[in-house]
Image 1 (tube, rainbow, N blue to C red):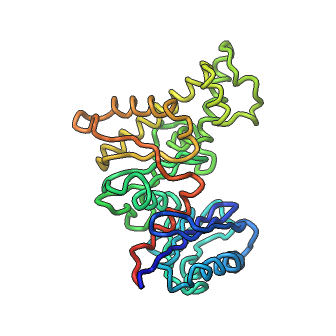
Image 2 (cartoon, rainbow, N blue to C red):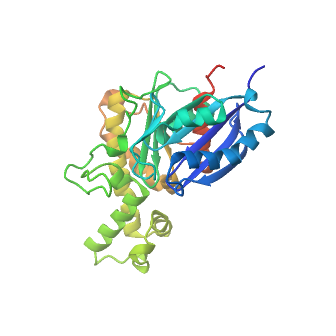
Image 3 (cartoon, rainbow, N blue to C red):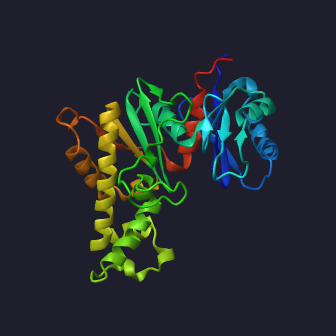
Length: 321
């Protein structure tokens, strides 16, 4: 009998979301458990099992499922382990895929959250017919997944594709957690937009701005967007600068792998053309002629709330059991 469903699990720093997904990318049922309340990972898996296994039984039991796909920070596809994730309570190397597989009795695959997003885009999103693309997730940080010849690029150790930590401004803004100076994530994330806002307001005290009506704690990428939509000069400069940084980075990425498309995803994409127009402009101007006007920049078609579960579930559709 053809197996109908997959389980997708997305493990974040505070919450793990999971759901049952059919082959068309419909999430039929979903739930969540905290991921920061358990000192040992086995207790976390027990709590998740208590909620998830009844959902599996409701859809015909494990025999109806191709398996469980998981996305997690520092998740290693080759080993099925989470390796030294800085934002999870369980430290060291955690053999989570093996533990989940034994608990549920189902094939379990793991990768990092950004690669899961790329696999989900390939199966359910706007790159179903594209074999060469890069996904860039612009959220609190900058995640990425590189697909060449229809296969996710993992590298020799499973950790390839950390484009958010590539250096785009040598000696530039320090990253809050990695200590790297001038990385893409320090500028082109929601956190980076906030830092740029603080810098520009400080460096240009003579320029009036709606952003000055907010305290430092109230400044977010959303408030910058709201002010930009009202024509605020500094807010618009912030998006122009962010797009310049992102566009220059994308030019580097294009000349590395020559993708057909770059897919932007995450909360920062809600800025729409405020971000897209300067990004495209600065990407094209920094490309060699042989690459110019060939690469599409697209916004993901996946719902942000569902993408992590969908991406994780996509890992196991080719599993035969």
